[in-house]
Length: 611
Image 1 (cartoon, rainbow, N blue to C red):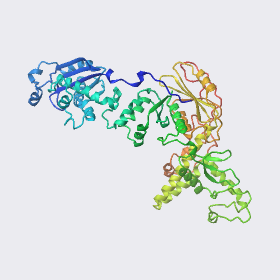
Image 2 (spheres, helix red, strand yellow):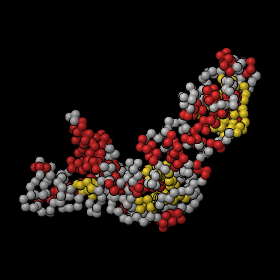
Image 3 (tube, helix red, strand yellow):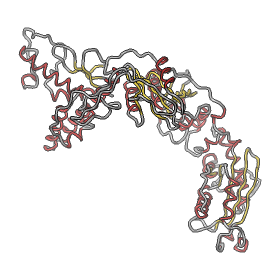
Image 4 (cartoon, one colour):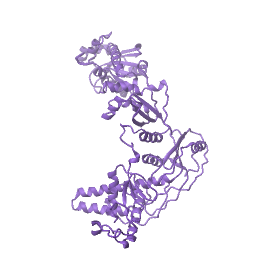
């Protein structure tokens, strides 16, 4: 799982503009709208690398008279187009002339709109040419000080075009060729040197940001992780994408609107790609690299060790505490995104159960002179600190808290739902929202701990999923951490790859459940992948089981408030057929997954023996 840069070939950096074939087209028409007008003349010039490869010119019979004002503007009369080929005859020839090229036009929406309308009229599918509009390019690099407007005639004069535009198709197309070459010459110092750059060349992007586009030139069109690096080779930002080059290029366009990312791009001097076989591997590598380098421009997942947990302490009179790590022998919820969320979950449990809220460890027997707090005086605490007879009742209450944390949270849900309903009835909406948020925090923390704990206890889990081409994506997980992954081609026996993964996979120390061995978000990613369609469990070293009625049965407080009814007593535990994401209906029976499932695969078949 070590992250290594990848050396790419010259084919991966895009198409240089001097290798692109452009077809510069201009049309004369009977009007300004394609819906009510027709084409009267085609003119097109095919160029590559500054060399003219061919020209296309013809009049077109519009099927009616040419309006007088158009005759005055273009010089094309009705008599000239009578007997000319129809659009049904001309369009196929033009499409063949332009096949495989990039269309260029001055005010491209006009010309391309007429071409698309003609294709629809004659029943020809539109090829979907890439289109470049020289008007937009001119607005990017030609200032008002140089030219009063961006009309073709104005630009042709500014750039000393060899042909003067005269509202005839071929002449205007030739003039547009000279304008295009002049504009590309001005765009080159801004980093517009490849075909892919032209798509965003007219975007309002600062010049210093656009020049950094060359940082993406060496990146492959593959899934993986990218690392922006600063002047001292420090990691500024880590991201992931299914197409590394395309994603990194987007940082230098108008599509990137985040101010901090613009700042990061200005600082960056290089990008390191880490090609990954699968999306899951890329996501996991991203999390690990963020945790390792703590990049200053990443805002998420930078410090997994700071994610708080809620602990029911292991002592004579347990209490709830917000902590940073999981310890053996105690019961835990979480981890939570923030300490505030963890404290809300604590308050949800304390509002439901009579647990002591005082800090510090209490002795098994009350000390002489100990006094009860105000919670004991109002009946919210059994006060084991001064009442030896309360010890048995307190222990029973602790067991109910532990059940709510690790299994069935019904009591917490019911009491909060009833409290919310009562507060709403008294129009105390802000208090109801506070109670709702506490319940939501508890349910999220409990559901997460209940999902993570079984995965963290499994020493080794192997799963497989069919790829789109008929091969296999293989994953090996140890104690909730991705230890190895592999891709198997179609019609290939996956068994040797599975054996190789087991032999070479990362050694993962045993964690203290419910904390997984890796980043909690990494375990969430793995659980998400395991629950995706088509995943098959190949083998597991231990059974995988979840409570049938768990916190996952209550997706949000609104569901609880909508209607609470007494639920029948469920079986103590059951095992999911997949990953345990979905809670089974109350009272249902789910079979336990066998351990150490054997694998014997044959070519071009499903993985036999998969659970």
